[in-house]
Amino acid sequence: MGDANGRTVGRSMRILVTGGAGFVGSHLCERLLADGHEVIALDDFSTGSPANVAHLMRSSRFWLVEHDVTVPFDHEVDRIYNLASPASPARYQVDPVRTTMTNVLGALHALACAERHGARLLQASTSEVYGDPEVHPQPETYLGRVSPVGVRACYDEGKRCAESLVMDFHRQGRASGRIARIFNTYGPRMAIDDGRAVSNFIVQALRGEDLTVYGSGSQTRSFCYVDDLVEGCLRLMEHPVEVGPVNLGNPVEVTVLELAQEIVRLTGSASRIVFRPLPEDDPRQRRPAIDLARRTLGFEPRVALRQGLYATIQSLRAALAGAGEGARRREAALAS
Ligand code: NAD
Ligand code: UDP
Image (cartoon, rainbow, N blue to C red):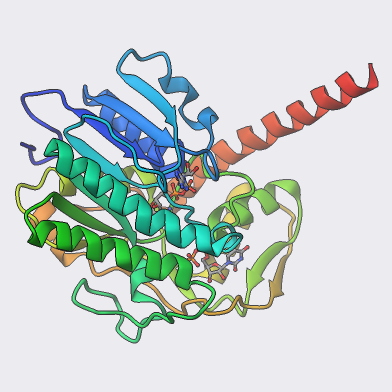
């Protein structure tokens, strides 16, 4: 049972977070622990890292399990957040077959686990299910324009199939599911080499390198701060009825060029902005319609882009300093 703030009332639950050592997963684990739950984070560390949850290891209510979701798993839990999947286009295209399998088999195995234990599942889906949309902003009723044979299909179609599995388990009365269609989310603990626009631009600005805007930079995205997303996910999970897919994101839309310019300003960097070829199938515009989330969950993003970018810059600055320190130590060890 959830209260209006997405908090679970009355009892502490045991919760499984697949992809729990990733960027979003680590923030979700942190919040669930703060709310008093027991949390099992399951991850193969392919794009995430134990370092993301190192600060949670002190808790006696937190467990980190190394496991690949393409292989069946079993944990007796009350809730499953299924987040395991690479999310950055640069990373999910490295091994596209594996990306498809992670999303399809991962969802199947998470649902089978939910079925066995009567657990409720939340599937981390994506705005990518809308592909390169002709409808703007995108409501949940829009069925999307996805290329099934393009370079992004491994991720887009993998996520679409995962949604289909959640709905079929629901229709067959096998497991109760929620689907969060997550729009671009950013924040502290994005990996230095993640490859997404926010982290790329910040890392480039902090290193004094050119910021690489793909295409003309006129394509748009809507960036949601991770704390707002986590709040939305909790509210959706604890909503008493299946409401079908729900968009979660921040509806403030900016061009990619505006994002780059804002990051140059906020970092005070002397970096230049340069233009590089637009990747294949790169969506031209993206903004969530969040009326359903507002109405049913009382969801409202609170963190403004500038404020969220500032926190992300601090985190990536510290990560870069740490990486520099690590490299210096390795060099010193080799030299001695
Ligand atoms: P991330 O890459 O930081 O985290 C994904 C985590 O899943 C990593 O820790 C990775 O090691 C793990 N993982 C990948 N394949 C796995 C496998 N086969 N078995 C076990 N673990 C595996 O990405 P993120 O931004 O934190 O994304 C989390 C989830 O949210 C993903 O499902 C992603 O598709 C979804 N999502 C994120 C965004 C966003 O903008 N951040 C947008 C839409 C959807
Ligand atoms: N992008 C860019 N430069 C970069 C990384 C990304 O211009 O170094 C663009 C990318 O082409 C896309 C937008 O920024 O138009 C958002 O990309 P991201 O990978 O963050 O997420 P996507 O929404 O494409 O999944």
